[in-house]
Amino acid sequence: MDYDMPLYRPPSEGRSLIFQVTLGCSWNKCLFCGMYKGKRFKARPWEDLERDINEMSRYVPDTRKVFLADGDPLCLDTDYLVKVLKLITERFPNLERVSTYAGPTNLMEKSVDELRELKAHKLDILYLGIETGNEELLKKIHKGASSAEIIEGSRKAIEAGLRMSTFIILGLGGVEGSYAHAKDSAKVSNAIDPQFLATLTLMLGPYEEVYEKKLMGGNFKLLNKMESLQELRWFIEDLEVTNAKFGSEHASNYLPLRGTLPGDKEKILSLIDKALKDDRSGLLRPEWQRGL
Ligand code: SF4
Image 1 (cartoon, rainbow, N blue to C red):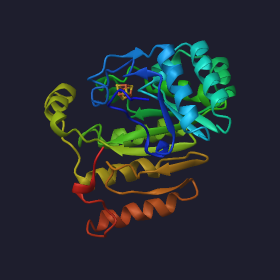
Image 2 (image 1 turned 135 degrees about the vertical axis):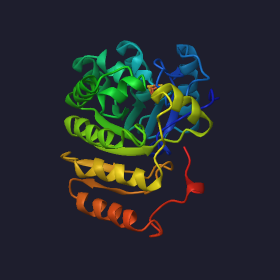
Image 3 (image 1 turned 90 degrees about the horizontal axis):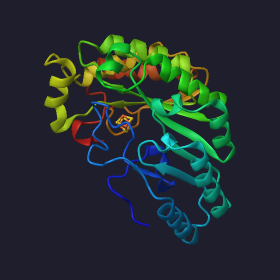
Image 4 (image 1 turned 60 degrees about the horizontal axis):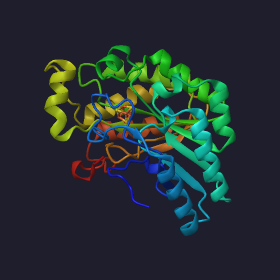
């Protein structure tokens, strides 16, 4: 099986077998995201996908976890996705779960019954970028959905029995928008009440100038290390999720944290405070170790 590069998957899917059901992202307009800008979106032909699944079932028949790529296979018709899931389930008898990325626009187009049907065929975890709960910022980054739509789509998936793994991008609102971004993102996370919650930190590289001009008309200023930590604290302190695994271990973050919320909230906050008081506490990832 050959992959059409670049290929992305969440860090937690490092041991999953990946099948590319689609190439690129059907939305592909988020201003901060360069993941699939070089790919034209398309659904891969069924014959190619079928061949990949059959081939890999001979090499790794004991596969337990499968991840469907690229950016948002959930944009495809439910009947087609069921056909894909059925073949995967047939070919891998020890399969425990299938996961995929989902955009809010995909979830808006699916009914609870359709999502239930996918769940019945072993789709289990959806990775969804909330990015921010701030309405103004959602428009500026061209997310294609309002915070109410992100909440509604995610709640539908949870009602259907799927597990939601959502993430926020620290720094997305720059210095000026930092507080509102953190607070509104906590509100949306609370309303979704996901099973997994993570943060990433905005890293733009050579794209910084374009983002700065397009997004904020020149007023955008990237957060520094301590400002990013403060934003993380503002976000975490408002979280009232009922039972979520939280992680900020993604390589883009300055402070790798892990815990279950609400149980570990105080512990997480005290680690952030410790790092905020002393940037040489040894808790922070050095700049050279950060990456996407
Ligand atoms: S929906 Fe996801 S993959 Fe597509 S452009 Fe936005 S952030 Fe990138």
